[in-house]
Amino acid sequence: MNLNWVYIAISKVLLWWHSAWSALFGPGSYFAWVLAIVFLVITVRIILFPVFVKQIKSQRAMQTLQPQVKALQDKHKNDKETLQKEIMELYRREKANPLMGCLPMFLQIPVFLGLFHVLRLIDPTSNKAFEAMTTEYFWTEEQFNGAAAAKLFGAPLAAAFNSPAAKLDAMHADRLNVQIVAAVLVLIMVATTYITQRQMIARSQKNADPTQAMIQKFMLYGIPASLLVSGALFPIGVVIYWVTTNLFSMGQQFWVLKKMPPPHLDGKTPAKEISAETAKALAPKPGVKPANPKKGPKPKTAGTPTADAAPEPEAAAADDAATGLNGRAPSTDSSGSAAAGTGAGRRPQDARNRKRKGGRR
Image (tube, rainbow, N blue to C red; front, side, top):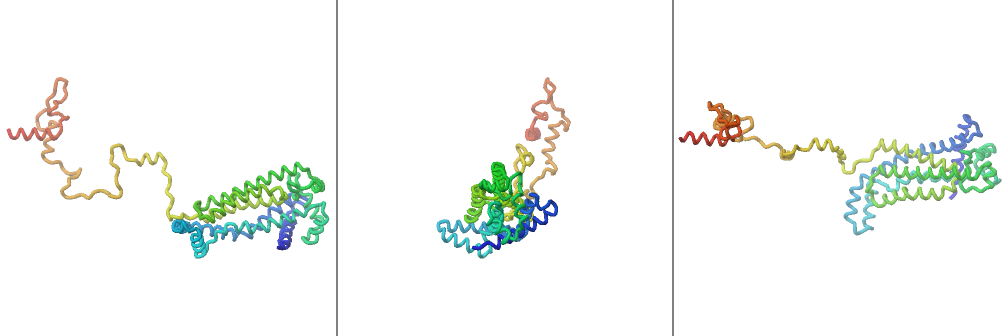
């Protein structure tokens, strides 16, 4: 497969941004080359922004289909072949694509390869590389020499962790310095890649179908692990490109996912957590029977007395007898307290019984 058109396109975009920043910092400034790589990332991400939005929408569609996928899994749990056919038919009918989550990553691979190829050709020790840059990719000799001399913390942008000594000597770079800068940038690249994938998975449904779960697991662990191994081959400029891409992805995901939050699959708003103090305040008092909200209050009937009803005559007479309002003072013992038979301590039922006995006499 001939990717020469990709290399030419990436080279032209890189040179265009370098020319724009050279007007501010000068053509020989390393800062102009670093900003050219950073804005190459911004250019690519702006072009891929509609694809990223489609990725989010596809993931939302996959989430809304999870109850149906779960039902199919329960129905065909003993027939994996039928289960896969039914799931794929469901995705086709609902226009959901489980591979859409990887599409932005796949579309950035040609850009990554193009920048890797262009920076690898910035080799002052190779006449063939110089000829290719000046004839095929339309670089001038000044641009070639300026890119070869551009350094970040003393490490050339075109140098890699395992660059040969002859290339580093031609760039006037120290091997240990290059390896330290490259190693730190590779670790940052791996960490930001993991965080980016973790951020995406954390905002999606956890109980995904097996296909989507396998893709998510590969992207979460497989890609960072491969970058850790292959990072020694990448020029420092490519590592800067990758770190910038990850940082841009974090901000882009935060903004888009905030505007398009994940839907609740059960259609219910999640219940809010109640603090211990609130639960204690809402709990019934000791000795009080909790109210049943389903039953509600009992309806009042004509024969049922209420708390506001007037007391019966016998109860009123018993109260008068107990409080001494009937004209007879309660008897007291030697200590000055009311007698047990007629005092306030006697129950109303005993007072009524005593009155009935007195009436029969």
